[in-house]
Length: 320
Image 1 (cartoon, one colour):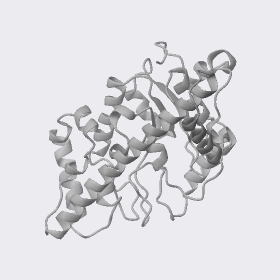
Image 2 (cartoon, one colour):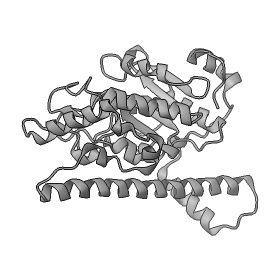
Image 3 (cartoon, helix red, strand yellow):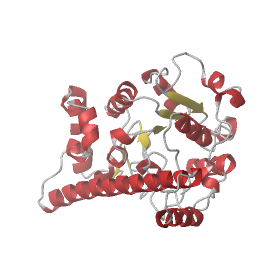
Image 4 (cartoon, helix red, strand yellow):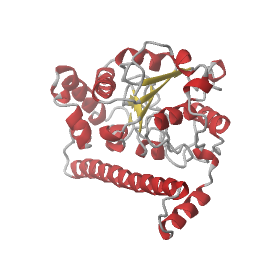
């Protein structure tokens, strides 16, 4: 749990030798094949109570939890896809609020869609979608992908973005993420560069961050929809109020969540976060314009894992 003091992030992490654990498992430095082999060995070897077997058992448990979360994420995606498909086939339309299907978020945000701002937002987005005048991103079934992929009870870190990518095929409802086969945007290229420098992660050939979302990283944009080729076209329509409610709910109902706030827009959200209960990491935005002004070298990925391990929470495997 975070300290109750009002110290800045710099104060919190300096000097690192006093505040952080002396040794942290550098997850990205362990090859995937070796990890699989170790898990297989653990499954066949007796538990003799040695530290090594305990560590392997923890890895096995993490793998089981990951597979459960992945299955739940895929189930939620299937539900949304079928809702959209059935409505299109029947000549009707699916209401926006019906596409948030993850039960833990519905419980955490009771009555949010009944508030006047949310009703106006839903009407606006539905008009945009069904008027047929402009293409809206991400695809309808992926608008709430961040929440449907990362259940409320699984959130252990949050990476905030601004609004979805507005190019064809890019947006998938997860901040900074693009589907397999889509060119990796420059900001995400810089994120991968920092990951390699920080944790030794190899640079992936794709920009799909679903693996992070399933592990408990909420990849949340402040605005969840956008018109084709029109950045910020759905800003100030109510999405900010909705995603602010998501952030405030995490702050109020959870403890020890690590918030990664990159750039001024994301850092403005720190006012919604109780710093006595949570950890706030700030850096420049990873875009090509600002990455050299404080994103490179921020080491937010290793710091996130250090904080999680200090709280007894399994760290993130950042390798894609």
